[in-house]
Image (cartoon, rainbow, N blue to C red):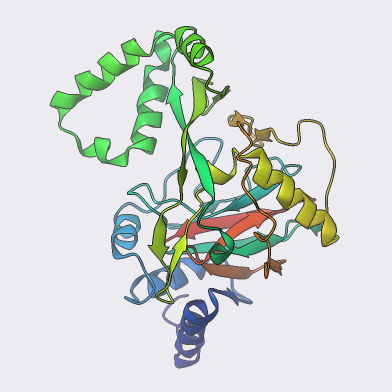
Length: 331
């Protein structure tokens, strides 16, 4: 929105959407374009009752960044959210904040709607039973060639953004770590010996190997949503790698007659660039019989923006057919 677009009427409309997010946990802004979404992001980011102030300031300061094979910058604050293989379902999760915990608000702008499928399913976080526990997935880059040093640094900086601010004195420590991990045959052997499930994939344009495995199961943390109530937030790293939650989500999709396609390696997550290749690691055996109660099915049309209280609702996505372009940003 330029100055000409931010009229008193538009401000009034955005205030209504702010109230809806707090009251209902989500809202849909209709008939906007990609030139307006940054201004909406900034407008909500300045609202103390809406935004995570630190996340907002970080994004304002740095803008968005490209992450090869995963996120491609489209505006100052929004990047692509459609790099996945269209045959893959995205199970319920909240967006995690690199600083720790979950972001407060998630934005999803539909630049082009899919011909078939591509619905966003919003699942109330209150449906997560207090007894539920997950294994959080973590990964270790294991370079096998010395020329993978630049990619290794890129991954480490993306995973631990604060390291970018480290003095030059600490950079040799990264080199030592690089050399210690220069053994992608040793680490898998150790994990197998310990009986820890793992997968090997890649995260960068060069295909530097990534070993992903799960830590011990733990209960989810409580975080305060915009309505002032506390909810257990399920991060992508917990939900995506659990076969159990994916199976229940597939049942929900079929029960609601949404687009579902049986494909080989349906659990294998592969982005369009094929730089990300990983899959679920384990069965949590959690009771998810009530997880999808009161879920909301949202099919965004072109030029619509879905704004979610990221702690009150988990979001997920079905498979789709045809061209589809989604942008995302977080506060």
